[in-house]
Image (cartoon, rainbow, N blue to C red; front, side, top):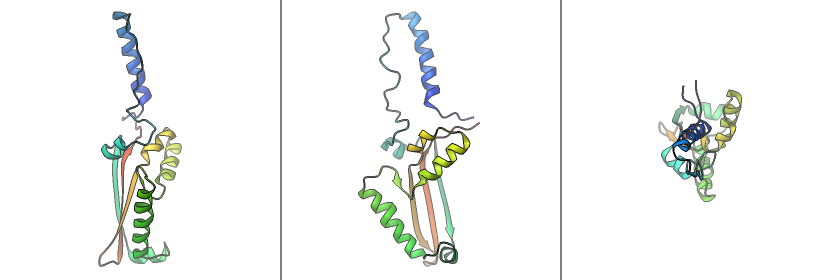
Length: 153
């Protein structure tokens, strides 16, 4: 499967260094990780290039569902997304947080499936986009998550 874990990479590197130490006994190891991996830290490199799995989900929600179930209008949701998720996040200097708390869902799934919950930091990078479609009657919503770090078997 896909194992996600910098710890396994570090253990592998340590084994290589131990092997090299026998041939080069004067070798000094200063550090295994330079922290450029940005493991468990919000980092622009993960937002831009992605890390782990990159996912885009989208759906069109009928206007009557928006009114009946969500108790609002397509126009109001599009405006709210623009003002809160996009503009508000940009004004706050958000790094990969242009969404309505994707981290709550990611953390719950990680805990329920035995993932490392600390990976929630960069795995919750997300941008939510909304637009009115079909002459403004329906809502098109997309969620892009470029950096979901998850191990699978």
